[in-house]
Image (cartoon, rainbow, N blue to C red; front, side, top):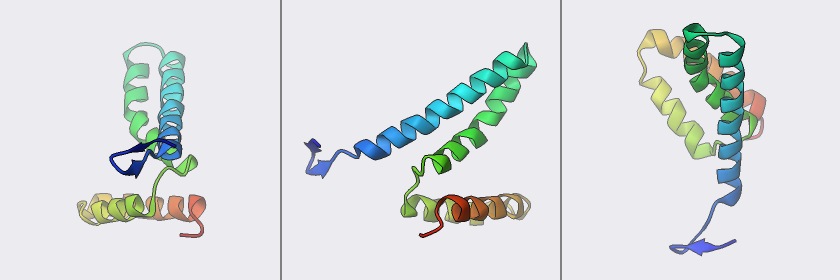
Length: 100
């Protein structure tokens, strides 16, 4: 590994994040192609964010600091959103990061 600014380059983290974005792009492309026209494009764009988040979990790209930060952001959401997002987030953590 090369060292930049007295830090090791996080090669594996970058590759996992790249893979998560590639998965999201491929699925969004397939959605846009399978549903023709503007509706397909809109559906692909709307689904891209949740697909990317799922890709980050699938590739285990998130660090414990990332998970804590997301938890803090969810706590600051309006209650109606937080009640929907928080259980899904906790479930994803239990599923993909069983041993914190």
